Length: 175
Image 1: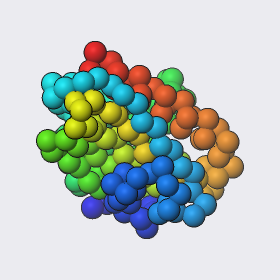
Image 2 (image 1 turned 90 degrees about the vertical axis):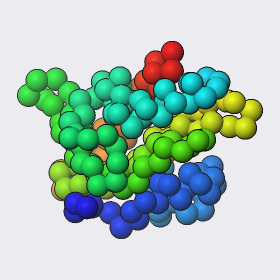
Image 3 (image 1 turned 180 degrees about the horizontal axis):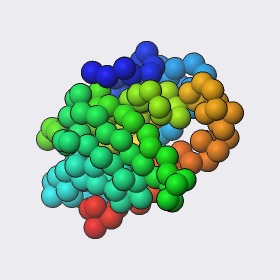
């Protein structure tokens, strides 16, 4: 693994499994994100969403440009960039966990040096017993030190915006 910039490696998976709606377990002082939406129904929709998550389609369809040599598997590094022309920001991350099971699929990645935040984000497809397919985005983060700490309000705005785009991307993947 690379030099992850935060100590709670893999926590996004634990938070999801333990019920992220609860305040318990979230790192103190971190910004918390948890969004969950109904995407569709059935195994086919679940498989499309899981494949889209693991193949970086969530990021692409949200307007980011992910560059990675592989799918989202533990240890895979990705640099997602966004912006226009010379105002493009590149954010490096490393996958810390992934799963492709019968009812849960997705991954979590953590921040590497050069990222404007320190923390972890997860993208999770879930097939419920009633056939409902849910998509969740879960994240915890703090601003990286230096100039990034001074731009924390803008970072929060961008994180909220890209989270909405992730939700729309999941809907587009399932159709």
